[in-house]
Image (cartoon, rainbow, N blue to C red; front, side, top):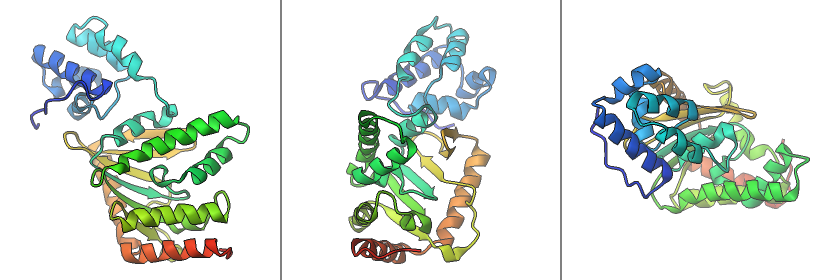
Length: 280
């Protein structure tokens, strides 16, 4: 296992907790695998906690305190980290996304959250929560746009998206909203900030018909994959599962249009929306 990298505890609360976990583990004379064994998690999972790419959950923190003899240190401190502005099923994935060096994702029905405009996000949340008050929708939109600021860095993370053609054709918020949203995606492509491929309807059956998929890579921790359904999501670190999902994404890339042809299609559909043309 690679030697752990020194963390900057001031960078985030999770980085602080990860640094403390590594210090306590090494003081106890345990390897990552040895600490993981009684916790029924892998050594890689312990490494992800120490690297700050995974959130420490309460039940695990209690057991870590017991094994490492740290009284209630980790239990107390992980309680503060459990507070998130994101839904429970997505919070850990959003936190991992923020420190990823590469994100590869397949979107089945909607423009991915990192690429959404304000108007598009508002339409999505209003559809999800038809009875919510305006302030709640505003907060959801603000949090989504805040996530997208990780693209302000000109190079990291690498973001490679495969969009089903349904993402382009489904009218979310009206044609003007769709035109703006697709122009935004096209703009990021033309700025060489993201890579996007469109999986056309003509491709027929494909490897990811069961739903969306996200794979995240990190500098000092093993990759993770994230799968979700309505109000449900699971962050996965099993190497065999992540490898299978990576192969799945590679198959999607091979089936999708080239980045150049995808950009041409996105801009063509945006042009049609701008001129009020219907899509079937």
